[in-house]
Image (cartoon, rainbow, N blue to C red; front, side, top):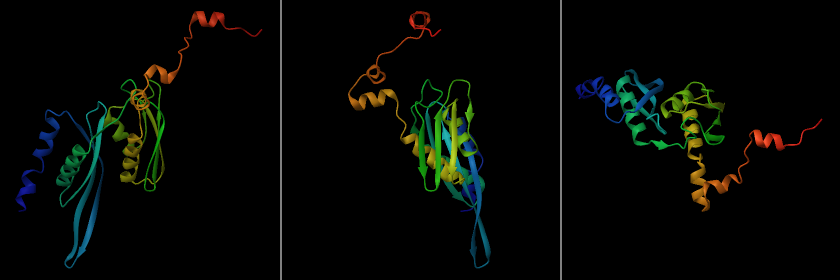
Length: 196
């Protein structure tokens, strides 16, 4: 029975990474936990992994095992099973600012202009890199527990909406949501009254 984890320990993870699904996985945190038994302590490892295709799909998973590679493998499998699609503006940032909460953890995610990059720390950075989001500003408030931060980010993603989704929900066209478009160009600037 001890042989089974040993066989899948190293090779299985590399095969999943090189497979046709083109998923990127990042290890967010690994924690050693101990169970006190009659003969002393029995150690195990708890891993938190984020998986994404860098094209708008992302998922997270947690796994526990007696060995580190097995815990990572379990977490990766759970992350792949629970992937969600996040609507992105121009494939690089969020459509609007959003806040997410989970337990004592709270995160604020803000859309950013092109060239801003990922301004986020620790666990949130791993989420955005696997998601494929290039420009975003994130602030974590409250709990600094990586599990709570990642779950709060996913709660925020669940409340994200694209203009197309909102338009479909309201039974309108996308152009109707934004109203009449005003062009600001040389003609508009010339017609504008000047003070002085």
